[in-house]
Amino acid sequence: MSENNFVKLGDVAHECRLTWSGGQTDIPIVGLEHLVPGEIELSSWDSNIEHTFSKKFLKGQVLLGRRRVYLKKAVVAPCDGICSGDITVIESTGGILPELLPFVIQNDRFFDYAMQGSAGSLSPRVKWEHLKNYEFPLPPLTEQKVLADKLWTAHRLKESYKKLLAATEEMVKSQFIEMTGDPRTNPKGWPVKTLPELATYSIGLTYKPENISEDGTIVLRSGNIQNSKIDLGDIVRVNCPIKESIYVQKNDILMCSRNGSTALVGKVAMIKDIPEPMTYGAFMTVIRSEYSDYLYLYFQSNDFREQVSTGKSSTMNQITQNMLDKISLPLPDDETRKKLSIILHQADKSGSVLQYRIAC
Image (cartoon, rainbow, N blue to C red; front, side):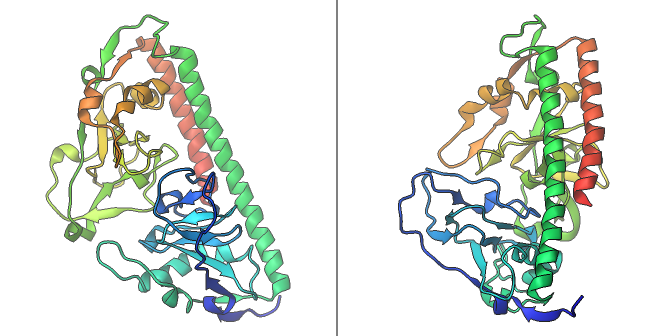
């Protein structure tokens, strides 16, 4: 193996500042919310929506979220499109293979360096002028090809684990429908209850930027719900008065109840492990119930989505407490609820194994 030479990012790549000038019908529109922390490939976007973006990106370029760079958002684009001005578009200029560049950028060492150059108190941003001076070891092109092939092979293996995890979650949802029938028609004839009869719920903590503290209490936010699980990879801590009632408890259901992204509103996760005291933000709702397993599954049903669909507004989608008060749903008998809990817990165990393999 040849000795690696250290190069600066600006020696082998540059910031692309093209402007989109063509038609926009069916063109991918990418905002920061579409960049998933830690992911290497862009997998979702909007199209045919109103927007103010004009920056153009091309297939194979790297899209880096330059705002709040500690979130570690950097993905390779699978197609051409338009993106937010808070996304830096980076492409190889020679000296580094384009297929290796995403791994150089989606890297803890790179993000540590990027954070050193971030400026701004509320929403820190990093500029290319700082990023281009990032130094890293780079082997010759022939060895880059071998390295890139190995990295992409490992990535594809992780993606296969993710697909298996998604299939497990879909299996649980399908078992729920099979055992309960469609909640909208209640074919089993179970008693119909309102949500307030089955659970209590409350929104979380409102805090100010000056409350954020490295040694404070964890505040769970929408980004902490990943694949229906709690993910503490990106956390905010605050140091301010917190009511005892809004500390999370085991088996609480955390729901994203307000967000600018339609896809996030209504997402839920069950609180299973509490490594330290945690609360939740004002755009989140915690549902607490002795029927938490059943409600967790119900909140992922089409019936729940339809009952809260009136919460959409022109600026932000939301699920208010008043809307939750109006939710009605059938309550299965004890035996059915126990069977659903067993299925859910078995799936959680399988999911934990898959999550471990994905993280390795």
